[in-house]
Image (cartoon, rainbow, N blue to C red; front, top):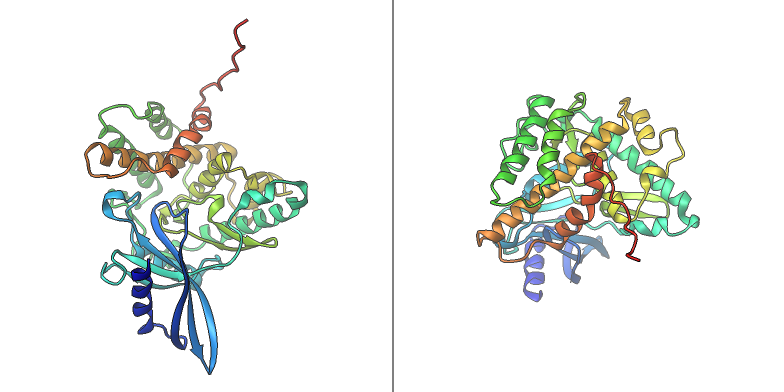
Length: 357
């Protein structure tokens, strides 16, 4: 830890442009960064004869043998700064990104640390916080509407977010995008020698047979869930963790967020006193008329996105490429969400069994 702290200091001392860097303080690991090593620290610097403090985060790739996701720090760095330039979406500033493993031992980025609460379940423990929950839900809806209605060419002029998984995803048209994503899910599933979760194959057929009408492709967050929100006193301060952002269907963010609410103990989707709730307010802001059935489709789509990561992790484990057991994050989502997932596909809910007499 001390060695990494010193590396951060040496890296910043020649690059910090807001005054003269004098120290790095409170360097600590943050728990909960499932796909990245995450550290918080403060940069202390002098400017105009006064001492100042900036709250920062170091996000560093995990070792390749244990990596849950493979994505680019530079791509995330570029997106955060494009969002700040071209939209009203509240995201942290990204200061530096390094693909070269030299400075921090592995690729990494240094971003602003937004101070606030990241425990959204606290808003749903009593009636006293209902007004705050509604305020956060409305602001989140407004943020998503701002993101999804931004001309994708402003954020993706160079095609940087067309296929960040390098999975031969075709974004030329909406149909090509959906079809190649489903083909990608199937290809990964068939590379495993046994049925990890047989209902997944049913879901691929469901996605093919029940495609909704197209919407304009947009840059989407890609892994939006309640724990990605930073808030305080009824104000949404930031949306974080944009490493899975890509060009996709706006309904992906809505569907995945709704699905994650089922396992996170939150209920933002029913917190807005507006006709149709969260979805109705989103439709009002965007001019779309997304239906609950379309939302269900993209809950299934989103579950497959995470299940695909689980399948990839299992494959690496079975072939000896992965040194650790399947990440608890994926286990919690895939196993915890399977019941809701099967019901979205039309499977009957299990009935309680009477104990034997």
